[in-house]
Image (cartoon, rainbow, N blue to C red; front, side, top):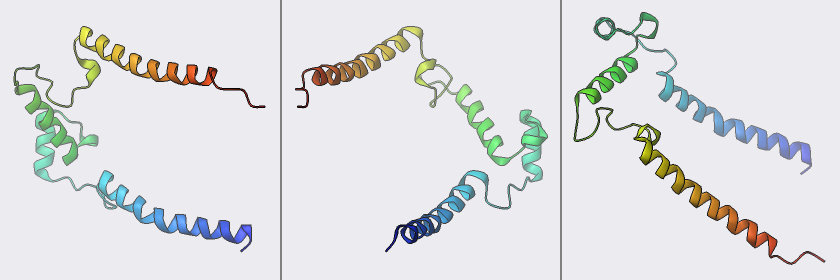
Length: 123
């Protein structure tokens, strides 16, 4: 089989595999082809929570309710709830986290550097 024919077969296979995956990803992330249908109940909740009409979707209403619930709930921690990033912790904890990461990555980089310096040059 010659090279152009092989490349055409690879391109056709890639298209055949990727098109259903793209459609599934679009349907999961964007509410399907038809889009979101905003009900009267959703519109009322958008007004209640102060969500602009252009952004009034059921997903945004659920996100706002999740945020309100997380702010009301405290389980011995700050009311940010789960999902708070590691960087949003107190300053001392953040510096410890950064130091541990620097030590790990620095150690790996140093190991590669010294291993490469000790190798015999090619003849």
